[in-house]
Length: 311
Ligand SMILES: Nc1nc2c(ncn2[C@@H]2O[C@H](COP(=O)(O)OP(=O)(O)OP(=O)(O)O)[C@@H](O)[C@H]2O)c(=O)[nH]1
Ligand SMILES: [Mg+2]
Image 1 (cartoon, rainbow, N blue to C red):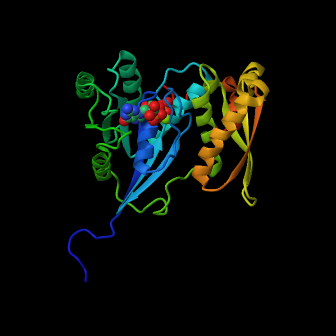
Image 2 (cartoon, protein in one colour):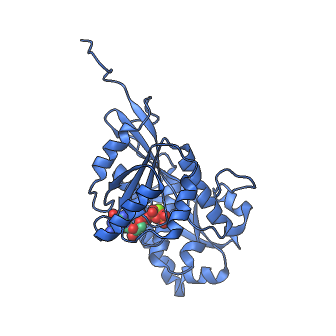
Image 3 (tube, protein in one colour):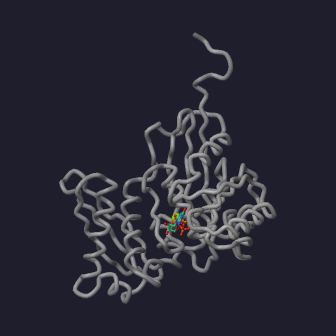
C-alpha cells in the first residue's frame, strides 16, 4: 500500500569531521560511534597522524566519521601534514564536531588554534564537551561560556569513554545529514585498507611502551602481508630517525622489540580475527619527519606553498 508523507526509503548520508586539540578524545569518540577500536588511542597527545574513517549506518542514516590529528602548533613538516589533514577533513565534511577536553579549562592557545581552524567553516557545528566522567563543574561551565562567546554551534556534554550522552549526540547529528543514497554498503564500518590499521596498531603499541621522543620519531608501514598462510605473515617496517633510536626500540638483546611484537600482535590478531606471525624490522630513515620525499612515500600529503589547508 502506498503511504502518505515522506517515503520510507528516504535516506541521509554524509561526512562528519571530528576535530579538536590534541588529546581531546576524538579517536575515542569515533570508536564509540562505530562500536569498534578502529582509531588508535593513547594517553599521549598527538597519537593520530592521519585521517581515519569510521562508518555507522543507523536505520536510514549513514554517518561517515572522519577522525583527524589534533589542531597543534606545527614545528616540523610532519606536523604541517597532520594539521593539513585535519583542516582538509573539516573543509570536506557536511557536519563538524569540535571535541574539547573538559578536564582542563580552555586556554588562550586552545582558543587561537580552534578559532583559526573554524573561521572559514560554515557547516552545522556541534561543540562536544568530552570527558564528562572526569571533569569538574567549574571547567565544564568555563567551556560552556567559551562556546557561547567564540563559535555558534550546539553544545553537548558526553563521555566518549563511558558512552554517556553519545547516543543522543548521534541522533542530533543525523538531523544535519544531507538527504542522499548511502555512500558505503550498510555493513561497512571502515574504508581504510587493512594494512593501514595493522601499521597503526604497531604504532599504538609503540606509544604505550616507549616515552619521550621515541613515539614521535617512529613511523610504521606494512611491507608484506601474506594472508593465504596460517598464521598470516605480516612484515612491518618501523622507521626511526637515528641509529640511537633503533638501539632503544630493539633493546638489550632484542628485549624491547620482543615485548613490542607481542603487544602489537595481540592487537592485530584481535582486529583481524586470525593468528598472525608479526615480523618487525627497525630501519633508520634519517630526518624522515622533515623530508617531503620520505613523508609522501610514507603516505602523507605534504603541504606545498599556498596550500589552502594550512593556517
Ligand atoms: N576520562 C575520560 N578520558 C577520556 C575520554 N575520552 C578520551 N579519554 C582519554 O583521553 C586520552 C586521549 O584520547 P584520544 O581519543 O586518543 O584523544 P585524541 O583527541 O584522538 O588525541 P590525538 O589523536 O592525540 O589528537 C586517552 O587516554 C583516552 O582514554 C572520556 O570521555 N573520559
Ligand atoms: Mg586521535
